[in-house]
Length: 236
Image 1: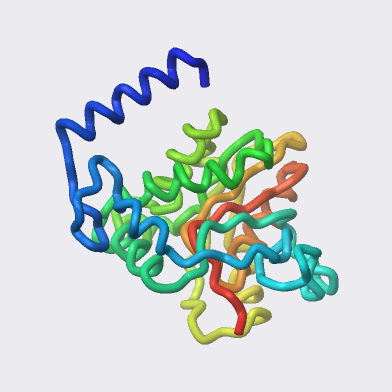
Image 2: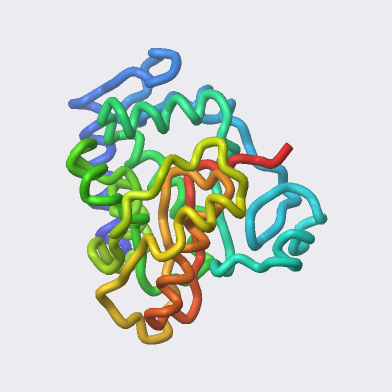
């Protein structure tokens, strides 16, 4: 971003602070044009510093964990902002079920800060099946990806990947069952020509959806697939 563009963006933020003040979504304290006040931002749960660079699970002193060594996922790295825990889970529900798109803007901008060093060539939102998209009216991953791509200054490929099969609910399934459930659920309409793709979603639970989508992206020419999520479910 150029110096002039940075100054223009800062001016717009100050203008919004003045004209459109709002309250923190969590505690209702004044937060200007930000989703959360500084105190609530500081109190959001954090991931451990030592975590696997491949799947973002804690431990291993920052080295690749045993699970990823034994059965490497098709994605090459996973970046997450927070563990999937209170109140992050509630914020994500606000986005998905109450259409609080400001949540996507907040997390998209925050994800950009932890993904800049990845040097991705293209941002790809995790697709929704058309029936789910029609039911919800929007794809939360697309809303996060749009902001993330803008902040990184790279294109977003909104329609490069599709979800063709409406899979059974994943809740209660083991990781292997989830993988079988998702097999061949995605398709691509592009040849990625060796580019580094950044696959974006709201939550990674077991990582099975990201794994299968990354497999499909690599079958269509992606040279590397990194994953960016707002929240990561941590193993017990």
